[in-house]
Length: 154
Image 1 (cartoon, rainbow, N blue to C red):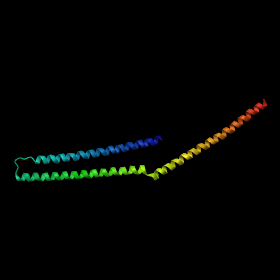
Image 2: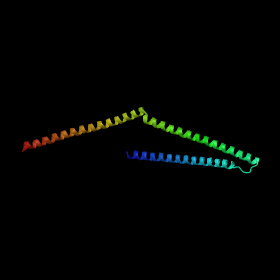
Image 3: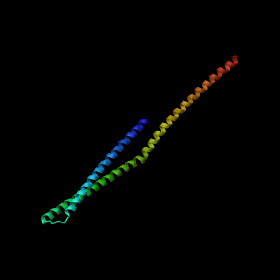
Image 4: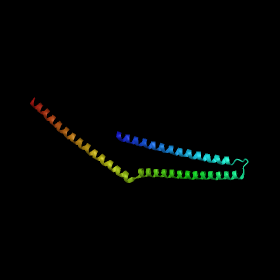
């Protein structure tokens, strides 16, 4: 019983550590994506400043804006993919839990096994009690016969 608790505790600790690692990875990913977005928007704002610019500079800045917007679009698509993957993983987890908790065939099989074990233990206890009762009956009979013989002899 104690070893089962230790296994469950270590399994829980392992699962908790796995979740913490996954959370750290997601947070790092989010931080990286946000910093990329901030850099892209900063470049767009910087390029959008109106100063004395020639046509070459304006074309160059237009190209920078297009590339930054392409990067932003790529990041947005990537975030949708991450959210979709997280959603699917969550769905898989829920389905597994549902299967484990609502698998009636397995639950009924486990209940039958437990019932058989308890019936076996109950039968063993009954047999032990019957043996003790029989031994007690013989012992009482022997004691009574010795007692009554001693009364007759006295």
